[in-house]
Length: 377
Image (cartoon, rainbow, N blue to C red; front, side, top):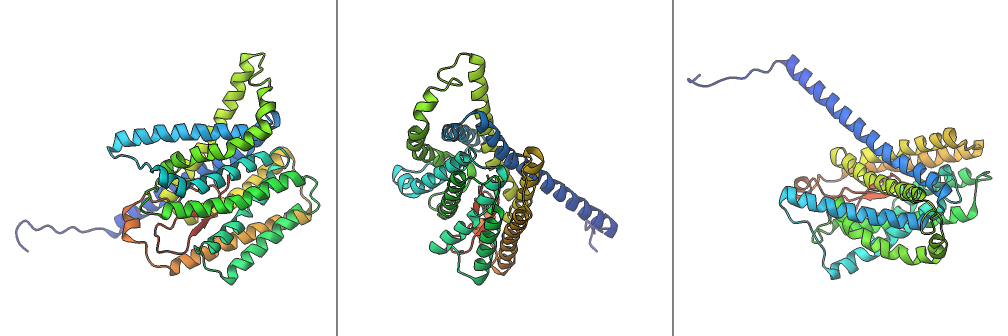
């Protein structure tokens, strides 16, 4: 052995100890991110429901959320630009109208109608009804050739549809108007996330970061929701004593504070989903979404006293079983796919994706399959 040559001997015990520590750290980080995601996802559902009990203007509240998210995204983009020294992507008007327009309109109607339904239905019915969004995501994904038709998809759709029917069958808290609103939102949610996936897959557009997506989508979302808001709530809210015809500044500040807190929760929900995806995987978010649904139903039962008949409970179990089956099938199918492209590996900010109820971007235009993430807003 020549002079100056050193041989490093690694003791097996030290190596195992180091590996165990890394696993524990990774588990702790994942657990913390899941809790972070649960905190905002579950909180915004119950918070919006509580706010709308005293403030009966869901579309106006949603419009304020959109405006706040746009301003916040703009500020964060500017901070990121100063910190990294790299200019953030900004679409041309032609790209903006052709690429973002329909996605923004579908997003605005999805979120707006979802919040509107809270005036009429319980959190439990809302949660289970919105779970059907996965059916429409699959339908639109097949329509746009993002997903190949398979027999397993038919089984998933039948399980979720049958579960929802049993959950709503003779429900004491069933309201037809609210149910129609939330199911329409679910259909639009399927279109929304399918179009969002297509949008983020286009490499020439460059919308791979969730902040950039929020920044570009929210103006269209505000424009899309504004006519419906004015038509349904324009006159009543202009006469509302909590805002424009106030008798006490304290009441106005309290109302504005409640709306702004909801907007903050909405923005942080998007960030918590992205952080969970960025540091773990879309499968982790999918599985987390399933357990989040269960926790939401349990919290609604103990917090609001929502009662369910045995047939409703069985329907809930069948619906969640359908969602779980889909996650398992996607996880199994993903193992058969090829490894990620070099571009995906080199771009950790590729939007796997910022999703409240929908599909994750697989990160390559050549891939026909998407990771369906069941998380919900």
